[in-house]
Amino acid sequence: MTHSHDRPPTQVVDSDRPADFMDAELGRPLEGIRVIELGNYIAAPTAGRLLADFGAEVIKVERPRTGDELRNWRLYAGHTSLLYRTINRGKKSIALDLRTEAGRDTVLELVERSDVLLENFRPGTLDGWGLGAARLQAVNPELVVARVSAFGQTGPLSSRPGFAAVAEAYGGLRALVGEADRPPSRTGVSIGDSIAGLYAAFGVVMALFQRDSRRAAGEPRLGPCEQHVDVALHEAVFSMMESLIPDRSAYGVNRERVGGRMEGIAPTNAYACADGSSVVIAANGDSIFRRCMQVIGRTDLGENPGLQTNTERWKHRDLLDSAIGAWTESCTRAEALAELDRAGVPAGPILEAADIIDDPHYRARGMIQTLPVDTGSGIEAVDFPGIVPLLGCRSLQVRSVGPDLGEHTESVLRSVLGKTTAQIERVFEEGVHA
Image 1 (tube, one colour):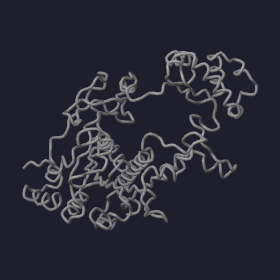
Image 2 (cartoon, helix red, strand yellow):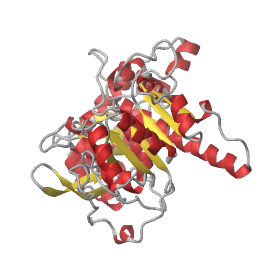
Image 3 (cartoon, one colour):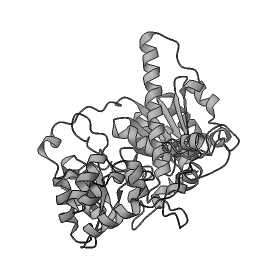
Image 4 (cartoon, one colour):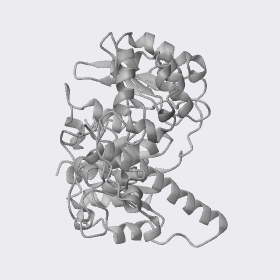
């Protein structure tokens, strides 16, 4: 029996990576771990992607017909965006309607045979579907449950909805991004979601490690609360805010937006070059600053007694940025970077997508991997980001791009749950096509 939901998985194609990268693939440390992902958008699916990258079998449960909303975000052609293909790489997709008894029962059967459940619904949603913590725990007492939400599972705001944009504002990040004389800006990616996904994946691995350590020591298994990973988007952002709160608490200092600079650190900024491109120069170390001033022909500034500490340089940041900017505007980006590199001054180009794709350093480390994907006009070879971090001195091979909607429904029902053809047909009729 073959359904439109159950197509052959996409295979990785060879790329132009170095020969040693093409050696026999390393074992993946999470092989043997099964994860059920009930997540949409970016946060929980990012956690699922990370776990899948390193060997976990991640079964993504999507609503029939429409699937994860991310399939339509930045959709330039076809039926599935490359944003979805990227965030959901290495996973299996099954289509189930959780509003139906057949859909919920199938999820519980999968939970019974799995190690982890990921979800990022508004708190209380799964309870309303009969898939609350008590039910999950009854089915699988050792299940690790990772929940990602806007404001966490507890507290006065826990029931409030929110995307990463809200979390980035509430977590303190948005107030620091942009120029001081303009409204706050946003980073060009959903950074709050991605950070939350990292924390969720890290929490899952810690919970699994603790579970297995207890097993090995013959100790009682973890209690239900200890197996729950609770990630709030705003807290994930807040945790990245460095000394924002201590500075305010101890000294009454309120950090402000400073554009391309970093408050209290100078000189460090982006500077325009003669060819219309820009470079980032970070000459904020004391000895580095003096070398930088030699490069730009301003030894007077490098030897100035009033500029020998970072605190003093921050007071004169406009002067220093003006001096460095005057020099970069007199040369091309390549010329500026070559001279700064010879002097040991940290600097780099501001790369765009095309630059990264062609960059030999990214290629050498396996960070650009080419895979076949349906772009809407046929199967094409498309460049995707590689797997971070490197293990065994290499980036692991991306196994597959994000799957088509329901691509693995039949195969998962058959291989994981051991269902017969008749039982599979019943699930499709009652839990997929309902």
